[in-house]
Length: 185
Image (cartoon, rainbow, N blue to C red; front, top):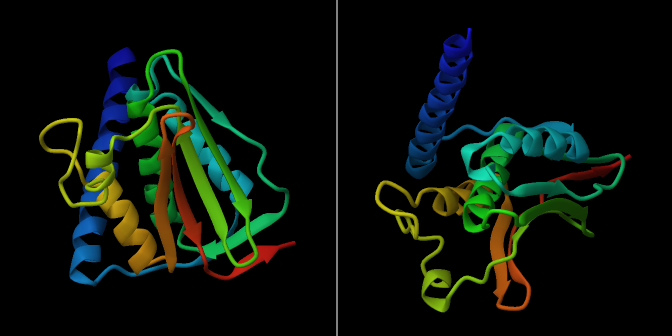
């Protein structure tokens, strides 16, 4: 039974990775199809953060979801946005050290919803200048598609923007802001 559960978990991760690579390939070729639906931002982030609680990168780290406004809904492609915000969470967890907390939240602006993921570490200037480049990584070979795909998917397919703020005093916060049709019930 223990091995069966492990096989199911590993198979699920492998399928997700294959689908992510396929989506990236389609996005780069301009062939990715967007499927917009209306969904609740609180439910979206609750499910997404829960899925990363048991991720290998979360070991020894805390993942905290701050209060999300009630009845905040967004018209967007939920799967693509989950890839974007999921990459933000994974990167923040990998940047955090054991015992540290990664904070996830979102807020509604006048014309957009911004999803934010914060970790307590500052990014040096040389990293800041390359962070969205394809195949750039501070984590070794065969990495570096996460931040690149975040920007590509958000800006070319979700009609939004991705950016970050970093300072030695406040750490690093990545933002994915969707300027698509916003719904507040």
